[in-house]
Length: 322
Ligand code: AMP
Ligand code: MG
Image (cartoon, rainbow, N blue to C red; front, side):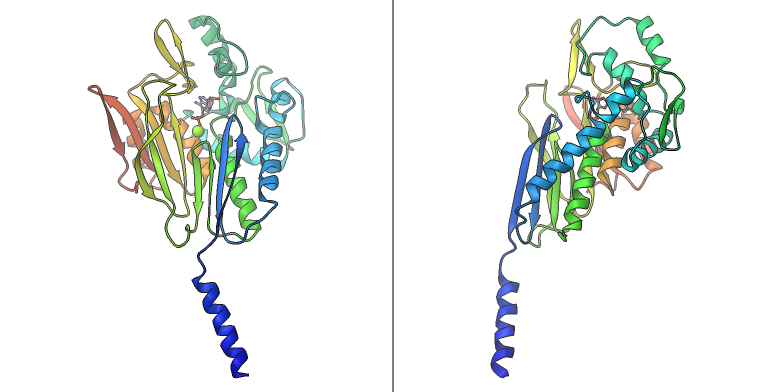
């Protein structure tokens, strides 16, 4: 009896002293990459499960897959929407209201006009912008009995500013369902952490903006982040030049033009990555001053804004940013 108690104690002590095993999975996804790091026992099926989760996700929300649900809706098909689709539309509308339309998934016709969608670049006139604006506005869509209702047949959706964040949250759900409590999910820089890495907090880095889209990426600032999500939106990598002027892929849905300001990137920390992603884009549209005022009314978010002034990168941050 004494021996078996001793043996149990020994096994317990040995397992308590064993360093936590850390595993990684990564692959290309959504035109970028995903990287998942998790602690505990290895799950041989993890990579395949994540791959099929993201494939199903693309089949709903990708503008680069012409058979996806969003592309079919944009072509005018009437479809019964999945629960995830309805939830994402509802959350998008909520965030549009909260940001006075700075974030708006009906921005798709403008994104296409400016040559950031699957179509190629062309000349854009003020008249073209005005006529496309007729087909933009979150209050022009709704959901009835699981179907998308458009006030105008030319209205189209683009979830590019929120879907990556939702994909991160979906991967978090998958890992939790499999019993993991300590992990990090990263899709192209949109990150959510749960628990810790072998007893130490996960560390996150915010990138220094580069001069142009080719510049080498480096991290300027790193900090611990537990049980939160962070997403970054920036205009210094994805833009077009027209007559020497840069037009960013982030478009102000009320003017129809890409927002030109001193703001280079916005990183937002929120409880979930879907919201962090959408709010980061919205703040890029709002610009630095409006964003800092707006953030005072939203203490549930923390933000780190990098802007360009007097030939140098400067930072504005909310007091609650780690
Ligand atoms: P992100 O990198 O998360 O800021 O998302 C940028 C992408 O979202 C763009 O490439 C467009 O597809 C789309 N987008 C651009 N402007 C807006 C906007 N004001 N609201 C919602 N989505 C937008
Ligand atoms: Mg975003």
